[in-house]
Image (cartoon, rainbow, N blue to C red; front, side, top):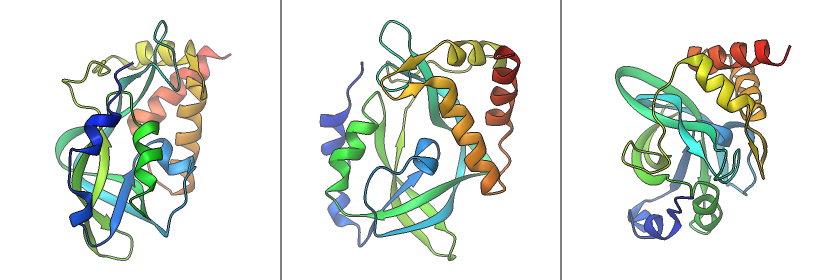
Length: 187
């Protein structure tokens, strides 16, 4: 495991923000296990979600890691997600949840109400030991299909996210391609 909890506590000055918003682009869209003050759909500019992070602690094990999302920079794209207005106290829980190689980053979040506000996002960068990087869809699906951990089957992460994106009428070809490949494996 590549625990980033202590690093994240000193990474950015969250106290300097007038309001604290966190942007979720993966499981934070559908699995909200923390209290929040407000919730809005949102987007961030210049990023796309990719199953390029290893999960040694939630959707896999150190011996058989799963695959979970991170963000990959790409010009002229928007990434859909959900933003939550939270209190500073929620970062203990979020830092633990995102501890396997993810770092807190400040980012501009465009909220559904039209405001663009500074907020926090967790990103697993290419220099993280938990970063696995790109792979073809079939290989990603096989790894996901065969992985599970304390938070459940890795494939359920994909299915739950795909279903949540559909509920929001969001198309994400990377997520849906992996979902299709997983469905062929489970036949």
